[in-house]
Image 1 (cartoon, helix red, strand yellow):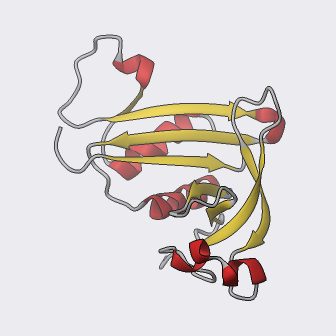
Image 2 (cartoon, one colour; image 1 turned 120 degrees about the vertical axis):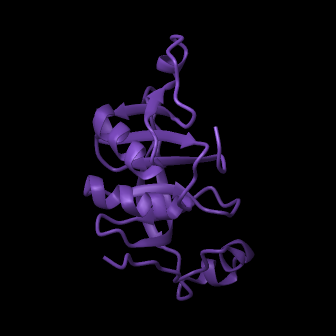
Length: 164
């Protein structure tokens, strides 16, 4: 295995099939991707490959996945942007702060922005889902005063819109 080790952890705001997630991870990582249990079956593996963990929760229309490989061609927020466009759904990723409610949201058009979200984690759900509470912006008193929001690499009102 060569390259830089990288992993991407996303929650998608709709149910996405395992094969859909596998296709996306393989396309964005540039390597074939297998589930952990598939890697344990003793198959011969290529020099570069990816590993995938996957869960869905139809009751709240949510999919969680983590994929990674020795190749990490994109920042996690860029990966989320591409996933959001591919799945035509909101995708949520952690940001770089310690604020549990603060995340990066990739909209279906690929735009990424910092937000504050509520988690949907009722007992018995296989994966979490998220509800948008508010965008992280300088006009929000809490965000304006928060050292975590202001000190983030994704400060209040930061936004990335895809070129295409």
